[in-house]
Image 1 (cartoon, rainbow, N blue to C red):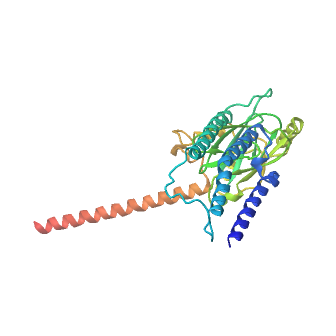
Image 2: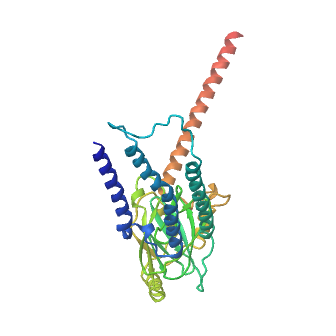
Image 3: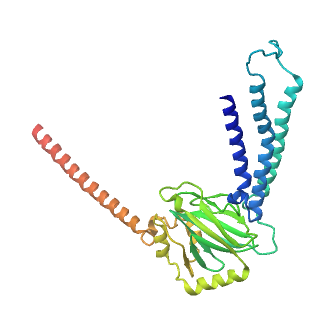
Length: 335
């Protein structure tokens, strides 16, 4: 039985190592295509190696101790019941982890500041700004420089810094393109900033990484990195072949549900800023503006609320009249 456990353990470790290194191309975070993702991959690898310096020897020694000091007939190991400590051994098993933790702390701090998502990337090219809004359960992308919009897909020029401005018009989510950058939250009433860059052309997987309900698994999008010429051609195609996005169009997208990939030749002015300030006085969610900025479901809810308040008013009035009549009658009887 002991040999069986040992063999299973060794095979499990071997399978884990094989899965990590033989299938590297299948893991997005280990196959970066941009400078930010490369830095994050390097941090993962360095951290793994540093922790392995402690974990691997400890695991091996644990098996050696179990095997070396097992109870067996004729055992001639030294019997030393008064043993308490060994200065050399304690220096090793305390000193090495302390050094590893110190190095890991320095490396993590340096990479954390170097990979700060709101810091612009060094490049001779001007960054392209794209505004992102997370909805239930879809992603809307606004390109203010070109005045075009897309749903569940975005196209960017390769080898060019992209400045994403992100917010939410639904429960908070997490924007993630693992081969290009790390995660960043999208939240109502806030505009987050994330820089990324694709060094190679291709289509990259993007998703909402924060659980958000029924269709969470469908909240995915594509990031298409193309050459500058193809990017200009794509913009012109959107402008010539797609319909404009109106406020009513956006309101229909804001209704919870899934959506196919779509494109629009234009979108309402300052729509992203209006969504960020939606819950401020005078914003889209302000009571005075609800008549012009509502979804069908919102209108139904408001009508039901108004009807309920009306019914409550009628009941209250009837109760008051009844109470008044009862009081007058009682006073008349007393007189």
